[in-house]
Length: 334
Length: 174
Image (tube, rainbow over all chains, first blue to last red; front, side):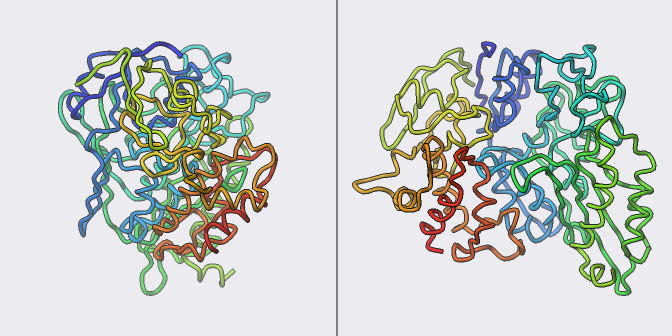
């Protein structure tokens, strides 16, 4: 582990200034991913700016929304009454992630900023454009361990996926990310936080160096209130998603789809908002064949990276499963 | 604002306060084991995957391998060794009675995790397998599936899970 200095700022502005002025500095929050990266030698900061104790741990509910401080722990957020009742997909996604111990340590902002679990990214003896720009992509190869690779939005430079469950649920709930930077505060839709790899896979997000996530705003909606999260993984617990689906639905009295939200995890470098699928379902009568057709409309643009072909059928089926959980009548009409 | 290249950290471990100088790279696990000589939390994987380094930190179950000691300055830590008073903790006794171990290496982490897990359940925290999120679970409803899911962060390479499950269910009174 490279030697580093450690700084504990007393307010968010100090934290931002300290990182913004030092290209070698990194924010440290819960540490469940970054401390591991220090040990693996894939993160080598000269300065750690510890934001864990900054007063960003409030949870404020109004009729319109929920404001989540960046330091609210994953376990506390998952268990919060308002989240369970008004944004169940968010609670389900958090509970499907990591282990009890890690959820007691991982923070709201840290979860969003965790990095890929691509085996080559985590192994510094292999080429990886995300870890070492220009070195090549070891995963984009028929002989590689490509089981976790992307099927949507990948580039020749990087074929990995984003690992967060929470971010997928936030995408289906139209969350807003609140950011403090050297030039002040700004807000962005969660969809604009993460990015596709293109030719700069070293950048997971659109945040500039020194920008600090201070909170997440969850707007209340009919689709969020009737939402869930389905995660498919290699074992029953404590594993990252092969694919996942966050779904929310609002049906009118006659059973037509008034509105719907679909976001997919494990398929791309960012949580994938399935807008073509949503469009296909809006105004339709919900049926298994309609859901399959909607998923296929989205998957028309799928270009599976080596080893990940199986995810196309898997995410289609997981989408059916998620909507079946939300609309039990679908089950009966099969 | 405080910047450190080395600093003193204050930790209360199993009821005793300590002040030790540490390099900023020192993890909580290494501070406990190598600096304070408390070998109850174990170094298994050292990457947050096995749970053998679990302690109770400010009352909640917590890994110590993915934590830098300086981040937890002032923390109150209870290790499995510190759970016992005059008598063994009920969870420790239950592990003995139900053979909740073979080699014993994961056991201190399992026991701390189980104590923290039951506390979470008693507070009504749901889990991945909880059917109805709107209704908090109770200790009485803690099924085998609930215990298995909630304990998935603690691995036992000897495979003593059947005994571990029985021990936790007895300690839960379920």
